[in-house]
Length: 136
Image (cartoon, rainbow, N blue to C red; front, side, top):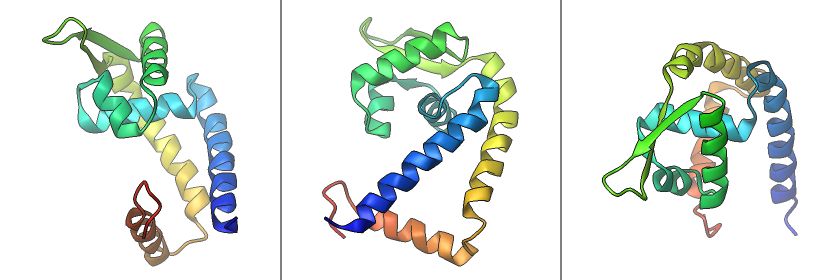
């Protein structure tokens, strides 16, 4: 077993836990924020586009989107095909987004403060070199 993967999993658990604490103020969880951020970055998206982009199982995204819609974070409408669901941020979410994003940036900066700008770039390069099969 490679300790690198254990350390990565442990760090991601810690970051998720800490991010949930930041997002609690907005009644959100990290997984929900990921969906909101994805839609913010890409504009309107289908459920299929969301789960494929986020590499999450379709039922998980469906449940998350349904929950976010009930909470007023998202709106949905039918696509060309009635089975297709198009998702977008609600007007209220668009208004709240800058405040939440600023809180996330503070959170990220706290965790990244030990890395120089060059080290952060290097980390991104290394992570991007790995594909889903784990090859470098």
